[in-house]
Length: 133
Image (cartoon, rainbow, N blue to C red):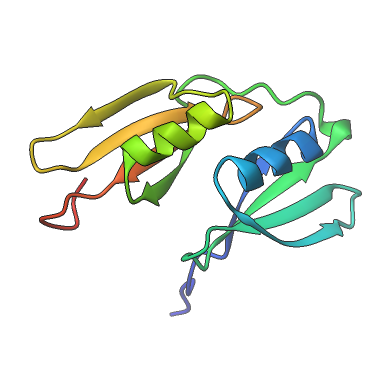
């Protein structure tokens, strides 16, 4: 039986490609890997986090209409060393968490920010005592 081997990328369609690329690079520190056009004319930008293999594909496809993200539809989750330090990074950019941070007694925690189209971004500070958050 043939099975899939690994997740390669996740696509998020956006209204303003350059605004979104700037957000993911400047706010989250992702690296732009490549740009290309799809056979149907979509503009694609692939990004990755420094310690991840999986890519995020941002897609601009005006023929598909405006993107309207429903609340709590989907999110991307990224590990950070410190939610406090990341909060200071956000403040320096004139931003703040949209929810949190929320800490557990074991030192792990989560917080959220919103990407330009309203996609939710979860930031996770792992517990020093184990892999949970």
